[in-house]
Length: 411
Image (cartoon, rainbow, N blue to C red; front, side, top):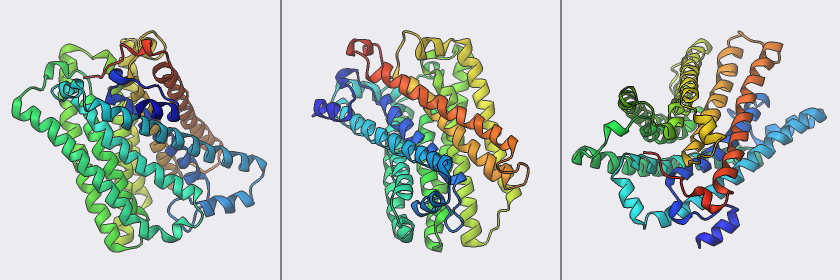
């Protein structure tokens, strides 16, 4: 079965060399699909709907010139391409993971610090729901006419993934606390923050109806569910950040897990967007009004923290030679897929900061020269993420099997 799925997806069957870290490949592809949706959402007018839809795109197409139509096609092709790649990688990962769970390596993994990578499954499944929603909005005509009926199903799906995330988290860390087997000395990275990342992905998905629904009960349930999982993400992230930084200051960075230094970037994106969605829900459903200056403060706060994390992580990764070793050099590790989500997170929230923070407050005029300069900088981040994604696929999944022998999970 696994070989058949490998042929259908175009991805190599790894067998005993598989580790759950490869879920980050599916996660990254899903994130890239969302980045192209973000282009449409901020540049295609949609005055009657909170997000861009197929009908908005069709109306914009009808009055656009050839350049505008070409850009629309590029964005829609980007969504379709990376959505397909996401599902290919997801199916492949689920097949490989099913076999991995029956191996002794799975039992050994659960007893180590590296068990946190099991949180990549609910994290990726939550991204799958986001990809489905974005793809449906863009490619299905008239979907928005029945969206209020879809919100309960979407929230139920996110709650189900949230339950899986909670069960996985309590199994991993409950055992660690009960038995005391967590190795703090080897926790010299921020990989443990993947647990917070998974909770935040569920939380931001649950927050979506709060920003889009007109039904007060839907908005209320959306806000309550989002608050629960976002609070869990913040608490877990704070604890794991302290533990990780302490270990790094004592033992130095575990270089193979170096990309974890940039985990705060996508995490902050999810928490920031969830905050904006909750604020919108309080505004539309409960008359607690959040004005444009407040949104400027929210976006500036989170984007500033992202830049700080990005600059600090870059400094450390350069010092330890991470890029020349794992991205361009002979060493191969699936943990390198951790480079994709920071690119996605910085681009996505950068677009929010630019449009919701700066443009809506009149600090920058839309389509002015400085606007296009900032837009080009964000596009550069997106392109770097795409180039890195394809390079990693060639190195880790399309390479000869013998080159993967050294790939292993990061503890």
